[in-house]
Amino acid sequence: MHQTPPDGTAGPSAEQQAREDALVRQVVASFDRCSDPRLRTVMQALTRHLHAFLREVRLTEDEWQRAIAFLTEAGHITDDRRQEFILLSDVLGASMQTIAINNQAYANATEATVFGPFFVAGSPLIGPGGDASGGASGEPCWVEGTVTGTDGAPVPGARIEVWQADADGYYDVQYADQRTAARGHLFSGADGGYRFWALTPTPYPIPHDGPVGRMLAATGRSPMRASHLHFMVSAAGRRTLVTHIFVRGDELLGSDAVFGVKDSLVRDFVRQSAGTTTPDGRDLGGRAWSRVRFDIVLAPAGA
Ligand code: BEZ
Ligand code: FE
Image (cartoon, rainbow, N blue to C red):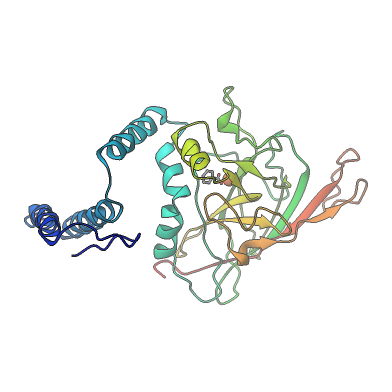
């Protein structure tokens, strides 16, 4: 494969290109006898694309060393509460591309978006109309909707996991005190309906005190995520949906750091002034609140 530099310079000689081509062929062939055909395909394609990248940018040895130092630092900062490699995948759009490949549009099924690093298995059960905030700071938000199949039939008993950042922009797992807040799960009712209290989503930065944050700063990119509320919805015989809803009018909708925004997921969070009667009669102590409707449509499993 002959490379012409994008800057219009002459580029490597034919002899040099032949040498580089030969190395690519040699590395690709080194995987020929891999007995797992899928692994062979992945490794050979990775080799071809990685070498094409190195050759296109004519990577210097200094840049190679800096890349290794970057990945080493990403490894050192990663532990069971911080996952710098997922962040890297997210800000490079690799997470969203993988989601796009694996969650192809199916009829009117709700679109998927990025999972992010802050889901925790084993969240508290909140009953119908319960409060997922767990005491986290923020304005109360009443969330309601239905879970249906693409045929419109209700999906009772769907497990709905929700999680979000507090008004200070942090998930519970980012605090040192092991708190559980602003997350929970509930189940859709016999009519597919669900309702609960959460927090009105606010914008927050992805963790940016590590190598990924430095890369964003060096490239003039913002770490801010558009305001959102995470959902993961699962039910027997349905494709599990990992998604968020976003806030209409949020100025970050067009510049989300992890490319997660989809128009179909933007919702009206309707502001309710202090003292407005709540749907379930809950006394909010004179606070303002908001409400949003999110009707969830699940694709069949295997779609
Ligand atoms: C999140 O929305 O929780 C998230 C997604 C990607 C990177 C960091 C955070
Ligand atoms: Fe989030």
